[in-house]
Image (cartoon, rainbow, N blue to C red; front, side, top):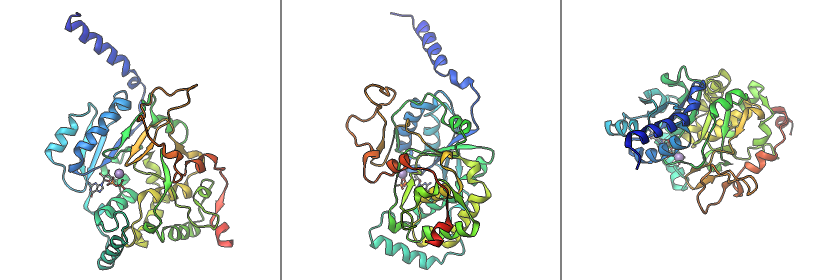
Length: 345
Ligand code: GDP
Ligand code: MN
């Protein structure tokens, strides 16, 4: 059998060839992971896949954020799970607290009511902090100040396909600012007044985009379609733009993050509908992905197999589920929509 030193050298040479793409200039990007200490093992499993499928070739760094201090065990274990740079940071307190304009006893009553109505996470305050943080604060974290692109990753999600190119670079080179893998309908009881507040903001600021009609139902209301934000590769500069910030501020003032249970996914999506054009939003069909029970995994056809995907043996592609908004997105014809269309209707 081969001498261990020779086979070690051969392995290293193979490895060097595999990481050749790192010689290309990388983009200014980072993974961003909001996570709790108790989710360490779920994230290790996710990170294993992300590294094997993609990041072993690119070595993008990870930023881990938490509203509580990370434990030593968490930091040591996660750092040992990748050869890329990892940073662990605390979220500033004012990015994760109830603002003074919210009446806390009313907010508490709203939570009780939503819990009694069996709305998922309806009774949870921390979930609301999370949604508000992901809507209006993550991109303001000091450690992201000089970073242009991020990829949001959650503990427990799975990645099924090898990604042989750099998706950040793809975004950058093709004028994309936001991307998604799964698109679906929001639970209406979590956002009873979100659309009205968004529409008011659009009217006052005279926003229009050729993506907006994707989100509008025939009666001028919200059709509940949104991009699932647990996966997101997007431009931090877009989130930091005055137009996005003023949208977030007006939603925040409206109180729905606490008085209702607005999710960051519909907030990001409606903002995209208001501020981005259709060709600035990218659907990553070639990223096989699972979050909770929903999977998008493109096996390709027999004639043109995508052998780089190891989809689960038996699964339902969420694209084929009646709750998916993907067919609608694929057949969508961009057309300018202004709030006047609704005002006149
Ligand atoms: P779901 O995807 O809507 O079911 O919500 P998750 O429970 O997956 O939460 C979304 C993301 O926020 C995940 O990355 C969680 O780890 C993270 N997260 C949720 N709540 C908290 C929290 O209270 N503290 C921290 N640090 N992270 C949280
Ligand atoms: Mn999740």
